[in-house]
Amino acid sequence: MDTQNQPRLYLVTGASGYVGGRLVRDLQAEGKKVRVLVRDAKKIQGQSWANSVEIIEGNASNAEDLDRALAGVHTAYYLLHSINVATDFGHIESAMAKGFAEAAERQRVQQIIYLGGIANDENRSRHLTSRMNTGTQLASTSVPVLELRAGIIIGSGSASFEMLRHLTHRLPIMTTPKWVSNRTQPIAIRDVLYYLRSAAVLTKPINHIYDIGGPEVVTYAAMMQKFAEISGLRRRKIIEVPVLTPKLSSLWIGFVTPVPTSLARPLVESLISEVVVDPRKSITELIPLPSEGLLTVSQAIQLALTRTAENHVDTRWSDAAFPTAPWQKAQSDPDWAGELTLKDHREITTNVAREKIWEQIEGIGGARGWFGSDWLWYLRGLLDRIVGGVGLRRGRRDPVHLRIGDSVDFWRVEGLENGKHLRLYAEMILPGKAWLEFHLEEKDGKTVVTQDALFEPRGLGGQIYWYLVSPFHFFIFPTMLRNIVKAARKS
Image (cartoon, rainbow, N blue to C red; front, side):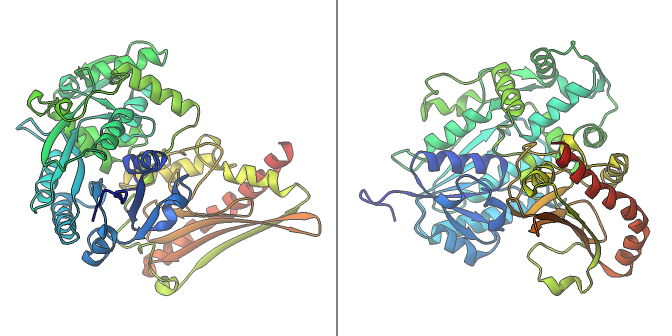
């Protein structure tokens, strides 16, 4: 319970995601008492704020976990979504929101703050409908819910920004569906965070829905032209055609950009609706505009490009775990669940300093590539995208440094001990579960570099898969290890 002499306790769900990770950083920087609810605490250990907040490890669908997370909380931020989890995400989201609201009522939470999507158009998408229904379920108890609805969020690392950036960079001439001419009101991530932070210090609980958006209403086509201009590119030739359905559009986006098809589709479907702030739901009556004003579309794009160029991207759309194939085990499964572990082991001893080799290992993937046989890695990534996986184009959040939870192409950092050990977990679609590990140690004045490719097959199909790709391992992995040492020696 909140009292005048006791600081408010804030719970942030979705703290490992794009908006949540930045919100925790901002709240903590302002001296607020913050608790986070995450499924896997290891995923946030690399965050600058990880040691400054209270961490509750649990599942937002479990009533006991929710009660633990919400106990003593004054304000709870609900930043969860399930669009990347299953085709029936609408049902999952509604049930999860209902359970969260009931737990908040049991624990006497004073305020829920929810970031949803603008859904004023009657022809709204399945994604926006689900976002609206989530708000309805959160508001189904006595706990007041302040629902902030936003459209496209422009910021370094956001899925919407990455989709815009890669479409514009890679396609000087493009055929597009008619929805590129629909009106939308984008908002900068900086301004979204301003409203979320401001909502944290309101003196009274609020039970209301407000739309938030930037100062401009534009079309998606106009945004692409603005992006091209700011990036120093020629004006893009955009040809509208009526035959590109949302499904076809998302497949094309999944092929051309790093954003996977499963995430591109709800984003595309949302653009079919006109996502514009309703003046009757204006937030300014509750929270005034920031003193420096809201960023325009051009300013938001410029800021995002600058942060990307400076490698100052705190969170990224790929920070949220991508769903793997249904036959793959969850990360929390016990070691014996796979029953069989197949291994490709490589080792090399060199007189190159361990620190120099670690620089190369930590910089693996992304623009630097995989130290040889990159065409084979590209082919594997292409095959993964064809069957609905993340593919190779996710790249990296930072080209030099890694933290636990980072995505590296179709891998995710699962273990990291600076200068000594890196463990990558495969998020490509596989008949089993796979890791790539590097380990460094010093012996007799030399550096021993160990590289292991591990695979836990699922049934006979998984074992057949391993032996089919093993011939490629004999070419890829020794080459990779030699080239890492070679690059370290040159550096």
